[in-house]
Image (tube, rainbow, N blue to C red):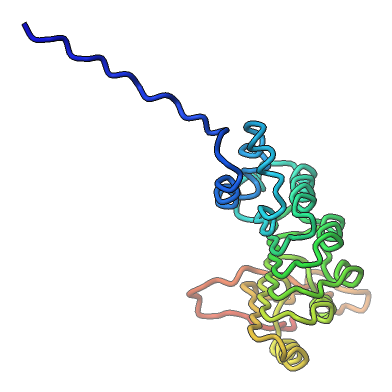
Length: 238
């Protein structure tokens, strides 16, 4: 008769709470600020302590996570402020989408003297020119703006408040006209990489008439249709 096969015991479960701080400090930046704030940084006492290390919060990216679409803006602002507080002035890079306001931007700039990179996407409640005037970013090297309210005058004011800026990328913040682009490039030639793009076309149309029978004109913005034979790239009169 064959001898009974020895029983194989399962290996003991790993206690992830015993991971040393230096290991967690390498893992958490890869997890990302949003997931650390919402989960990983709340798992156990040791992970909570690790999540408070200032060096983990030198880069806070909140523009690519799906949470920005289903969490309340007030909660997202509170999360961003918590990240800024944990950085203890060491924040160097911040990216936000949809939820960034004047008040939050002021909070970030006042507490982040070392901020060198800023990316803002579709932040329609933010008036960056006004905010920058109050709190200039003297160390900023890279600025990316997408679909965020801005005029040529606002952008000029922003650039004047960022004396060390080297990279500027602006897309769909305002219609780009050739003369404006030339003026910005001439005035801020110190910026090594300056990209201005607009994927919309602006067409003037008459939608009513004044008391003298003259057409009243309004500006209408349309998405730029790729592959079309006719594209309006400048204002056209009715």
